[in-house]
Image (tube, rainbow, N blue to C red; front, side, top):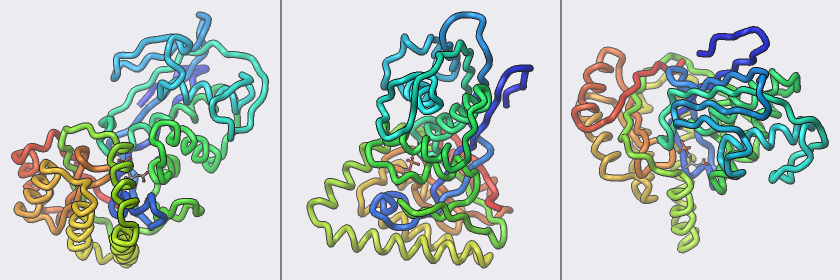
Length: 328
Ligand code: PMV
């Protein structure tokens, strides 16, 4: 977390994990996602005595003035577009956003994140949300959660093609979300807390590619893939009810079924399948890949007393990192 010096504006946003429904969510089906607060992006904005907007992001070895970055750089696009909507500059690549003329401020922006990049944990959305809130706070520009979410979605669209909007929504509200693309944010209650383990393959896989591969499949035989999306939708719907009613044990079987459907969509990988099998062999109640797939993370449902054992088995099976987290 940032220490808050006088005149500085800190903001933080959590990681997220998709429990059920990834990929199908792009086609209008519901998905469930929850924040992962063990990992987070932190941003601090303060006035600068030097001219320009200086970005210090040591995790990605970036120390630069804004205008030396290409305009499509993910951090540059957040800052440029924020300055535009808050009426500090008069042009923006996001023509759908309202904006106006204004003065360019001199700023120091420090960005750190413990969320693995391109691993399905929402690192991009978390940095966007934390950066937007820190800029808004420092520059006294009032933004509601809805506005932060809508802005972060526009930024996701620049970098991810056709995102459903689930990442920015969970990260903005930092609450469990039942997400249907284009519909108002719906949160859900967790009847009884349950434990999941997130296992990282260590393979960085751009979501944009798996999403466009699924689109290619869908275009070849829409009715076949729509049937798969409908099955995933049924799983998400059943899972939500089970979570709300505190019947979390049945989520294991639902995870296994969801994973098999994601395999059919070709978005799993030998590494993800290996970790899913390792978790189940070690006593998990079920497991699945999570997020875009091909790499990134998987998750396993465990009874709390088995969490350490399953986590150790995942690491033996090649997981780069594991996070044990309680969903409540
Ligand atoms: O890889 P992640 O965690 O950013 O999740 C992507 C989820 C997809 O459904 C595959 C894409 C989307 O935009 O919803």
